[in-house]
Image 1 (cartoon, rainbow, N blue to C red):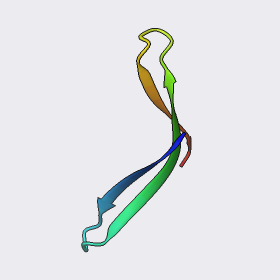
Image 2 (cartoon, rainbow, N blue to C red):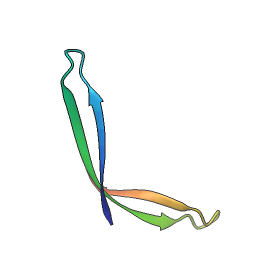
Image 3 (tube, one colour):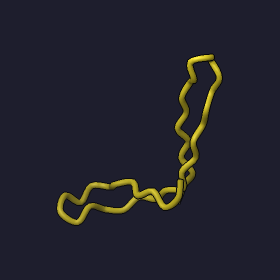
Image 4 (cartoon, rainbow, N blue to C red):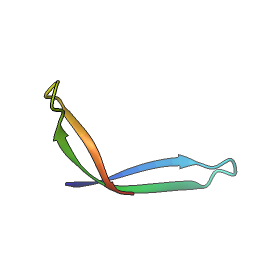
Length: 40
C-alpha cells in the first residue's frame, strides 16, 4: 500500500496536488501488476 501524488498547474501558475491511497494487485489473466486506488 502506498500514497500516490498527481499534480498539475492551473492557468494562473499555481500548483494543485491530488493524493490517492493505492496498492498493487496482479491481473488474473495477464499476471501483470495493476494499481488499484482505494481512496482518492
